[in-house]
Image (cartoon, rainbow, N blue to C red; front, side, top):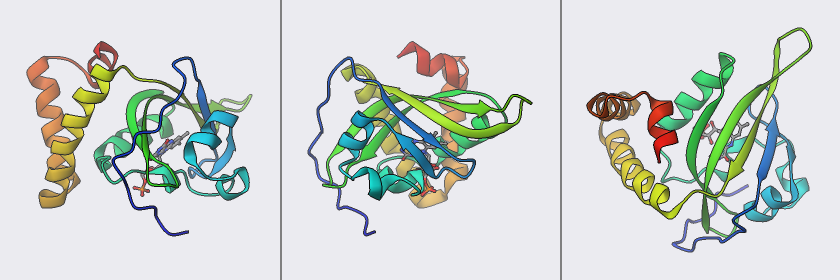
Length: 167
Ligand SMILES: Cc1cc2nc3c(=O)[nH]c(=O)nc-3n(C[C@H](O)[C@H](O)[C@H](O)COP(=O)(O)O)c2cc1C
């Protein structure tokens, strides 16, 4: 499927919406709830079985997904602000709580993400930070953006989780 061309149009959704998707171990979409499907702009058939980067927006820094995968594949949950791309080119921001799903034996069998609507303030803060990180990635790769993110956290004296939850 061709990647949509991003526009400046923001997709609106209800303040109380809870946007859910589940993936297998490699990040292929196994399930999306109604609002997830609606916001993506794809049909359920188009989404299921696709890698989750089908809604990846080019404004998202790679380092955030590196953090996400490092956390969840080691059994931890992570909260991340994510700007997603819809099929029609519009975008929507979410505050995503991504967690591993465990079998009865404690093995990771997949992942799921539960997303809420972020505040305007959080979108602004993360939008500005992500712009800087994407620029660094374009010139110096993910190593540069990771260093910068770690530097910002060190300056604030907080861990990634604390920073995200403070927004
Ligand atoms: C449960 C789960 C939910 C995810 N949700 C999103 C999402 O909403 N948007 C997104 O761009 N990536 C999401 N990802 C991350 C993607 O799998 C992928 O790492 C990311 O889009 C970067 O894509 P790339 O492979 O092109 O670098 C999710 C991953 C998991 C495990």
